[in-house]
Image (cartoon, rainbow, N blue to C red; front, side, top):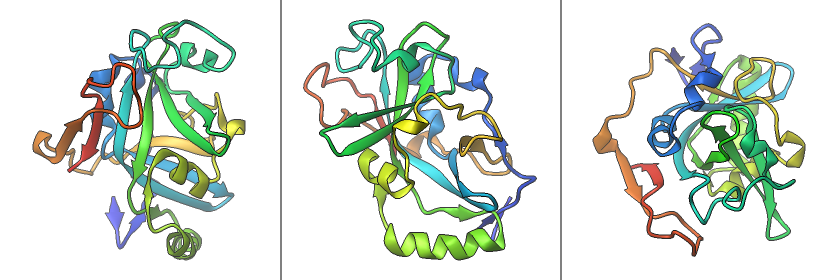
Length: 202
C-alpha cells in the first residue's frame, strides 16, 4: 500500500523469476507500473516506478545477443530476472532485466523511472535529498548514474529480497490500462529500427 508517499514493507514483493521467463515483447509493457527498489544502504530504500522500457530479443539485429553468446552479453543467456548492465560511449551504464528461458539471449532495457516512494522515515529524508539532485530519471544512462548502478551489478538477481536492486510489485496498485501505454520505435538504434518495441506510460 502506498500512503503519504511511503511504501509499506508488507505491501510489496519481488517479482519471481518465472514472471520474466516469458516472451520479451509481451512482457515489456507489463513492467510499466512495476517498481525498481534500490537499497542504497541498510535501512535506506527507495522504490521507483518503471515508466519507459524497450524490448530486445536474440532475433533482433539491434540486440547484443544477435550474433550469439559473447563475454559482454553472456548474462543475457542466463536465468530470467537477472540484471544485465553494460557500459556505452565510455561514460554511460544501462540497466536491463534478462527475459525468457535460460539460453535465449533476451532482455528489457529500463529507460525511464518515475518519482520514488520511500520505505521508512529515514528513507523519506533521503528521498527528499535524492530528488532535489535527480528531478528527472528518464534516460538509461541518467537513471543508472543517479542510482549509482555500474558494472558491479551485472548478473545480480532482481528477484531476491536480499538484492540491492529488486523489481517489485505492489499488490494493491491498480495495473495500467492499455490506453495508458504508448508504443513507439526504439531510440538510438539503426538496425531493426522499425520495430515498435519501446513502451512508455503516456
